[in-house]
Image (cartoon, rainbow, N blue to C red; front, side, top):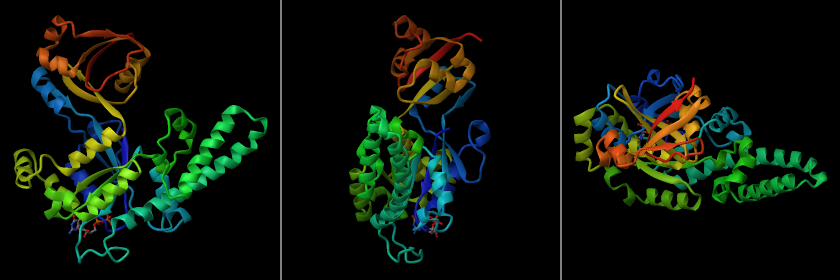
Length: 365
Ligand code: GDP
């Protein structure tokens, strides 16, 4: 499953948010590919389409797709120099697909701020600096190594060094690698470096409970938004404390509580959705009477790869896929209806799976 790591300075609300996630979360036991670990919370990805498909197909079982949040507490100033448990935490960040950076935007005299006052931009800078320093170390090592191979003047290595130098320059200017908007080819060149500042970042702006409905009027949130725009990051205002309360409610109670707050959905749901989108993820569905289920793939996955998410045998023995777009299926009202309208397609190995495809795979065992 895909993982987002929760980071942030001490006392900004990370544990509170993480507890809300675990409380609201799904049983990892239902998702055999998810980690069972106290620092990992498994959540289901909310998807309206799954609800509609369930109404249409009336299956025995419904399985949403899942997402993991990892609590990476303990990142402090000096981590890249080994302060605190510094390097260990940086290593954990290397393993995640995205970073959820919690920043404190709430005022509360009873909650001490490590630097004495609420200042989200300075907090962000502190954490980002540690990530930038860690990346500089990786980049410099790599440049040294590549330079040694440079004598042959091989075009590929020249290109690599150029790219590394470009990233290094950005890092020296306190800019994360993701601010460079690297091409897919460039991303591939540096992939095995697992750069921390290349990972997608989502700032969870933790506001006070009384501010959630109108969070964008909070000047701290505005500052964070402005900053995030400059480095290709997203912002989700959230009240960690409120999320912890929401997570304890279910069904109708939850809906009523959210309505009273003037919210369409919980901040946690928004957080999951934004993270999912930011990671370039698509959802496809399988829809049978036994089970309607959502599956996660990366944008650009071909049909056999999508089949492989269900089972490696499906990928190995892939013959073809029957595909209908979610919107077409819904409009037609049934699989047969879609077939009559000519909207049920047969697709082969080269088919690029689209977000919302409803698929059935044919394969050899
Ligand atoms: P962490 O060190 O980042 O994990 O921070 P915690 O989640 O432990 O939170 C630190 C303190 O801030 C706790 O006392 C929380 O109750 C409090 N806190 C977290 N979120 C909010 C919030 O939205 N409003 C207020 N007033 N307090 C909060």
